[in-house]
Image (tube, one colour):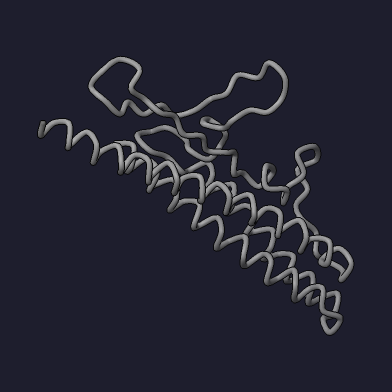
Length: 170
């Protein structure tokens, strides 16, 4: 059902948030002047693996065989763009439905992998690491906004269930 769909998406987004928080911690470490170039190289190796994990989560986040975080249910921006969404039928009659949007949550969409050359977020010197912190903060905001939207969709569906149950009693 719709509530389960949203709960599954939320759990995958929680995983993505955890990974992004770890990348941010590593960026803060790398921005610190006490680390050597070799230390930063080791930190960069971990960041590379974590960025790959973000893409793994996005590509494996599925409900009923449908990918959830790769843009299938994203709201497109731009002129004449068709918006994809997940429709939930919430009543017994025609057109009693609502839709939910789930944005693309791949590493590229979150800004930690370059779309053009597939390069990943670079924190191998303090200045790059400092800029990466801003990039990561924006990515985490994007994830948090999506999670808030999912919470709102879930609340709406739960209240709809209550309303349908009341109608069934009458």
